[in-house]
Length: 355
Image (cartoon, rainbow, N blue to C red):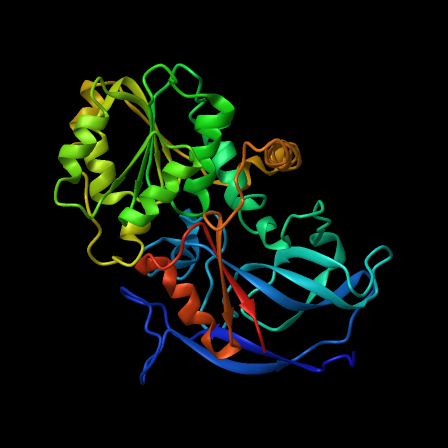
């Protein structure tokens, strides 16, 4: 393979007010090219194979979030849009990395990129396991579920739990850990998922949820009230907004909320949904436990080993419910990413570059 001298890139043109603008005169992102610098000692050149699509990326380009209160530096206008991904080494001046190696790192929306070799992680998947799962169930998404349940909410077999976004990248792993590894309230059948379609709910139940409820159903609040009869100890929140607000009324005294994400508000910079039931936090002595998974990265290798073992033992399903891999032209990278906000994926949404 010849070594490329330039790379295609998608850069941030303007931070959006609401939904990112994908076409027209004033798009959020713009496509261009840039020269690839010559490799220095210790560096590698990667070809992007797969890109991770994550709701948190929207917060990195938000107008509403104060940069000093964001857990990573924001993406500024003119910068390449940040994203995790899987790349293949095409050139190396690193002592242990060689051409052909597959690695994970923060790649960005570009087809080629230069990295410090010590900042990438080599992927060596067990036989029969797709490499893409190292962006999903065996990557940061799966670790987020593991960390949020075990280390943040400290869920035990005595707890009943509701998991929103249960068909998503984090939620589908959280359901399986709660049901099959922790064994939440087996006597009361209390692993409850929330998703956005009836089909997704049935898939979540295949993963192990005792019941999954469609939040778009007219009877959703009634159904959730019935499912949480007796109340629940833990709410694993991936969505925020109205569902979080209602769940504050369905938690038992001293209940815990593992606040993982708030995708319902990510495209509402100027009009976020507020909490109306906040007094429940006081009256029921609730804990809302916000967390960022990068705080626990020192636990990642052990958690990944545990999840791989669970897969090998049949306790972690990594079939079609675990990921949605979309063959994508480079020119359509923003469009594939935007599927996150329209419910267009089940499990982890992954961009597979085909050109």
